[in-house]
Image (cartoon, rainbow over all chains, first blue to last red; front, side):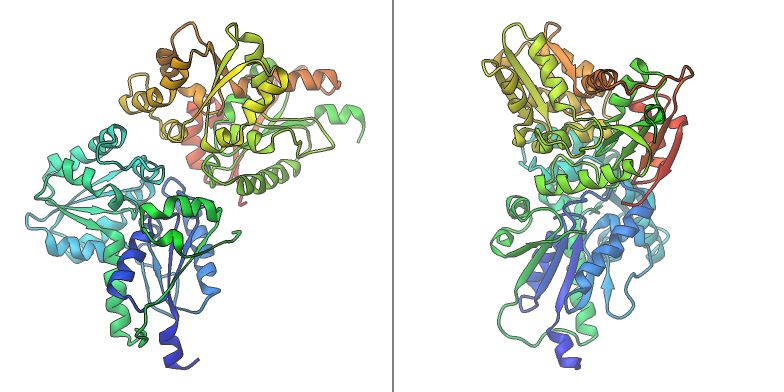
Length: 272
Length: 272
């Protein structure tokens, strides 16, 4: 395969569910000419309450799905997977990024009072992935991390209205310890959370920086592809193709919360 | 295999997660001499938000796990699986029951005002499994059914205290339409729900009959085994053996909510 052909390959993005579409949305915005192949493991979502061993097994299988297509980079657009991987890259022959390092880097740049809050799934928080990444960049930054087991479900089920009392009550329970600890920057460490950004902002207050892990991963991917001269030279718009492990219908029903035009795209279901 | 050997075989019970342990608990109570083999698909829980096609595929795989052991009956201790199956039995060579028919039968016996409420996962409610079963028994009974997507997660995460505000708020949202409709009998159609029985009872009021689908399946299983002369003739207590698809540690952590002594038993993890 020539170097030029490789540049025309797609960017492969996977997630345990549909939260990774927040990364796809940002990729479409900042790299509109690129083709994206997305795989959402909707038959086994969520990963965030599973053991590390099971998460790593699923990760390997998800990457194998993307590798069935010509891809030039792989993004794990899932806080749980990225945290389970830690500093290990599961692919050797092409650029790879999770969401943890890009989000940690941005948070370290933005914090003024040197105190960062992190919210994520139980597996993400248990792994200390974000904490380790922040402390590898600057060990002098204070970190307050909270596991939020319910939030991913509240988002997947569409309890996302700014006035939803159940979501607000759950978010308050998770966020108040971080707010009280005084963090001025919050990493939304699961790619589902930006969907309830308004509720999170209401609770944390306007002065707190909210960092979307999926968006940061997309920006970081652009940087990697640019540095390695792997960007496409197409001038027309790229296409997104979606694969899911549960039904196409449930994708069409739920994807619009994350990426309004996703439901109009090409969507295929596969067994895993 | 002689008839006598078959009688000494275990009862196989499976669930998408750990809710099925509510059926195991009842089996241990009413059939203390029987051995039980339980499989909980904890790596892929919950099933209740997946498509019917995916649920049926997982069901087949779960039954194959139980069939690796000598079992004389299979119980699908999962409202979602039982509803997806409808009147179809997925095994031909031994007795089988789901939770839908036994719970529907008991509900039809208990209701005085001939109005039954049903709560279940989205897949359970969408399938109309309980409604069809009730109307096959007595088409003149009114039914009010509500999907409760959050409840299974609230139970799995231990939000089960009678005073938990989030669980109470969610349960109120789901139950008020059934209460207003006037049902005098409520089928807790997912085997997770009995864990928050007190909250459900507080909302529905003391006069409403609460039916645990898992318990009814256990009672029905006893009836089947008795009729088919398949009960063990052992006099000592039977044993429970547990298999899970996620880690043994997470089983030990969570199983005690459903069955206090489950965490002390023999537990094995397997890939599916």
